[in-house]
Length: 267
Image 1 (spheres, one colour):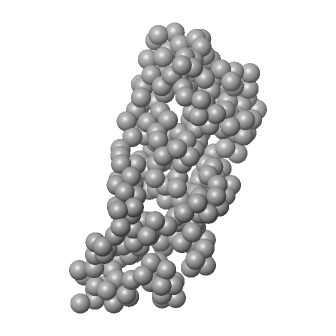
Image 2 (cartoon, one colour):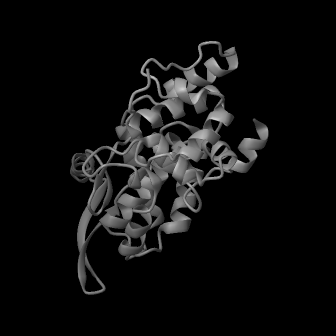
Image 3 (cartoon, rainbow, N blue to C red):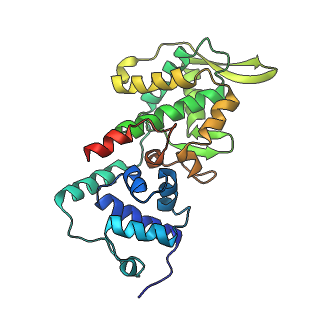
């Protein structure tokens, strides 16, 4: 018997079907002639899917519209081992991030060292550099860099427990908090008093952080805030809630740091 499905239920079913087929969002979106952000919003339940799109999806993903809309619809269990392995990998990847306090402190110190002479790098810019380092690394390697959890606040993504970590670092003489005037506004800045322990960072981690610094560390607070508010993890999250790292895989240009074209060709 057919029932009226919510947008979220439709999105969940389509996501499960796509993953069982081993398709990327980019690949499926191209097949049904919509943008990847549009498909991302459908899968997240934030956008409705029209009849023509659903028909195209049924052809690509191989499901019956009547079955799909039924109460007892389940994805076919007759999948090959390769698909099961992919599904298992996805479940592992969705694991809740665990904050590595020591690594977070050293990432923070490293960013401050690299940006020590830049008067624009106050708290706002610093928080965004941390955010993009963490989410870019996760998008590239499907592993957490610092494991910090970020919350969507009105002025941008902010790592949780940051105040506690900052207080610890100040108490141990690792950083100093100062107030400076920048373009007629008072901003809070942090000065590194010790060097980062780079043995805590893998080469791939340092490379991602360096690229974020090179790209964004000269931006103003308003420019980097505006940019972060257009990033898919931010857009798809609700005010005040934790930002899911998995949303990094729904990014489109210029935010995506992966070459999805190569990825599709390899599949």
